[in-house]
Image 1: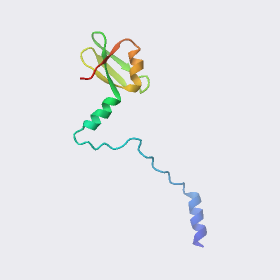
Image 2: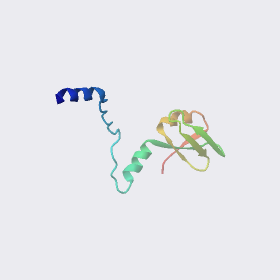
Image 3: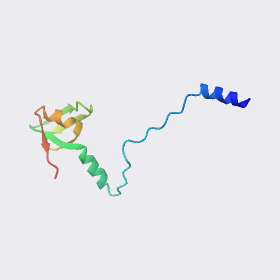
Image 4: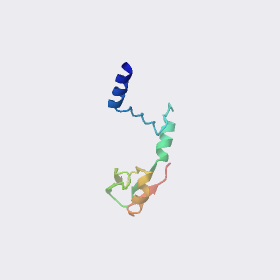
Length: 95
């Protein structure tokens, strides 16, 4: 008789959802060099081409970036091309 009760319970209990597997792998570099290398690979440095500051939203990521003519800002690669097309920014080479 317990067989029927188990089947009934299975029908009323929603199926367990599998936990999604992570899309990125864990970073284990103790000195942070691996994290810095990966972060720099996904970002590009840009700065304002004219004097002053400007705030722009990345069209693909939605991130809000503040650019200055004095300091470079790290921008996600997904936003770089569109932001450069504005003509207000220039790419900065990494040291």
